[in-house]
Length: 393
Ligand code: LCS
Image 1 (tube, protein in one colour):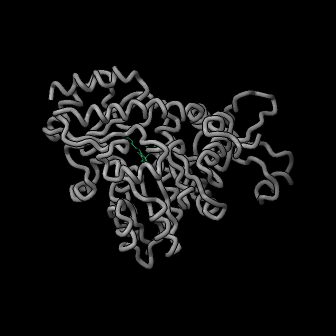
Image 2 (cartoon, helix red, strand yellow; image 1 turned 90 degrees about the vertical axis):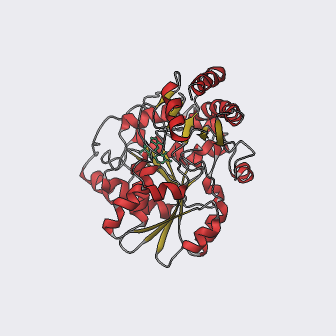
Image 3 (cartoon, protein in one colour; image 1 turned 180 degrees about the vertical axis):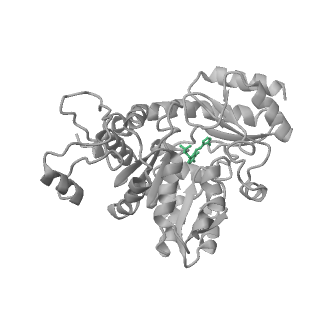
């Protein structure tokens, strides 16, 4: 059966197109740096592209390729480019489309380093950037300049859970022939398919939901079509942002259960968000499954479900948040997200600490914001843990 005809969970299990010559049910780990050519002519033809064939693992490897095909199939894109980390995926996109004299427009709330490197590293190479509140698409229109070369969004955004209207922003960007990239880490293709709304590039930190087991760091860029694939693939290869075959194998294994893990975590997240919203010590909660979320209607239109990420603020601000984080017992006080275990962290002092105070303020990353990644443990235990921790606040 062709992959295109399968449902999401079937694709998550079977997609990738690898047939092992020895009949292995699971794609083996091709733990090799290089590949033998049949003869000198074959080697030359592999290099010239006249023949398909593996050359060297940084360029391509069967275990990695199966993962690239599987994720591209789930996203509905042309091709995947696996990277050593989510940040390598972000940099593949930045380096492919930006350069001296080019300008980036991005949402103001992004994973800390995705924004911080635009403030600390890329100006060295003559790249300009503007960070705006893209939850109002008109702000994107107003910020585009003749040298704007990329529009970069995260939706829902880390850590504010702000949601941007992907279709509307693509419409504006494409009037100016500017490609749009969406970091789809918070949703995974199970909950959101940015290509359906017109984007050109999707990227993931697969460290999160796609792998889902908090045991590897990995990234993926997916191109809508061959043109964008050919712009980006050489950046990964030549910068050495490649994945390792063992990392690819673990990620492919994690991917198989993506849908059922998210179903479970999301079901609990809805209840946890409602619990927090009704708790007297909680000032506000941002979760796309709550009617109080400012983009609740847009979330319903654009996402298949509200996901497993919640941000909230306590009435006592930062000190109260710190007390709570020190009191959780089952949830781990740890950065990262999207795994089977519930994680809690404080973006202002942890994941987003490298941003300037002005950048944090403008993006709504307040000192009191606490981020919760709901795992697949029993709901009663997740709530009991939060409840006992809140008693100490
Ligand atoms: N994009 C998003 C939305 C992320 O949340 C992260 C990591 C990255 C890209 C980078 O991926 P990595 O290189 O770590 O695989 N987010 C993290 C977080 O919120 N806490 O720790 C890492």
